Length: 506
Image 1 (cartoon, rainbow, N blue to C red):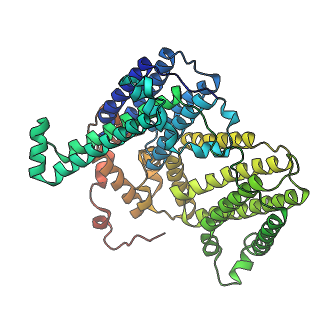
Image 2: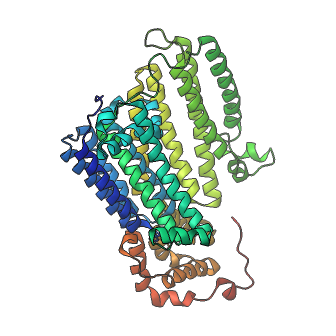
Image 3: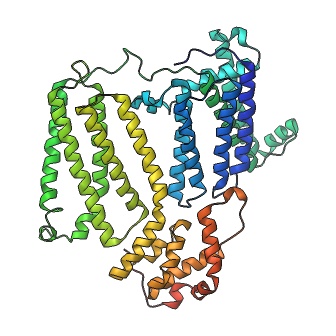
């Protein structure tokens, strides 16, 4: 942990200048540039360069634990320009935002391996950046000689809070009332439009955000979320035994039913009046929710239960281990239900992600079990969980879910003559090559629906600004142009070609 940073007007000026540039570039790269693409990659590269530039000028060397986080950040940023799936893009953008917060905290705190779960939670708390933000503005205003004064800090804080609030309200009033807007326009000689208001507000927010983040990263002081002596009162062994014992009993009753019916064969289910697919269709989201809640219960009780020195009691180890083992069986049930559902109704984006998430949960529970029984270290468990999440997102990018879904659903048609062609139409450009290659294997209305969707995509191709360039969308454009003559025969609506056919809802 670093001590309080001294006033440094040069560093503060550099942070302000770079943050202002990033705020203006945010408008250039993203405003009216939907869908996002390589522009996001370029912007994250600029943020990375800015971080290294400030570190060099401020003579704050980049530690080894930070060096491997930046390639990870750039990987997720690059995948925004590779994958076209909206869900995967959102996941990559969130991963970049989370990694920027982690990088900021590691720069102040030290090794990522020292983090515990509460440190990752603290990343979402913005108040810790307020004092470094004030210090940076105070440096620029030559207020160093009284920044130690509590009254002066309150004045600066009040000004910093008031300025953006007044600006935003003034802009909104100018947009809402033409007379007020006329006076404001005359005052600063600017005609405000709603689009200008949104762009100004976004640029200001991004600029202030980067000033706060860089100020904290290079001049902040780390403070634990829970100071020593402030932790919650430990949970006793008796109440923990009652809680975990009750949970184990409930889970065991559920598992007995699963063994008898879900894992026991189709005849047991049909005897109860359900088809195998109908039985599997219900409950997998609820079972995933049970697994997540069980994880939270175990983490909280494990964190605050009374301990003998550093080890848990034997009773807690037995009961918590039993819960984890039974949660493993419940997750296997959810995984099996999902597999049966996909066999009956095909693959969708949500089903594939739930499948993958169950695998992630399984690994996290295994790490928790190891922590309770063998290695009672909060920081090691938190680091392994962080790595598991990173591997999960990396794996989903490499896996390319939309292409997998299209391929598997087309293979399912070949085996069962059953296809939800309408669902394939909502998949992203990632799935277009698989849809085009499998078009000839499909017959009748289903073939025409897929062909018509590809024809519409070909017709919708328009030149885009370079910031929106994306590898999957570019590949889609190329192959659709190459197959233009073949796709033109699917120009008419499927309802005109097959007027008597009704598409089934699967």
